Figure 1: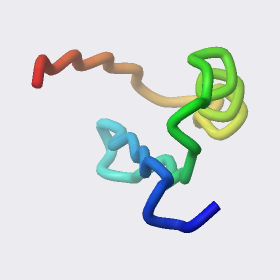
Figure 2: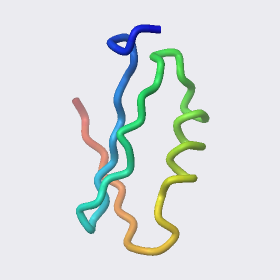
Figure 3: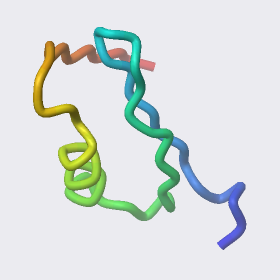
Figure 4: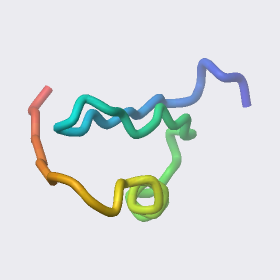
Length: 54
């Protein structure tokens, strides 16, 4: 699959560090994304969930 067909996801934490970027095919499921993010998320620190409507 060409790289331009992939979606790039990155999450910014409160301390300014990032998780990602991760490259996913458009057919990825939410479960696939969640599994990867949970394994990469720091075990300690502040949690903040920000929702933005595009």
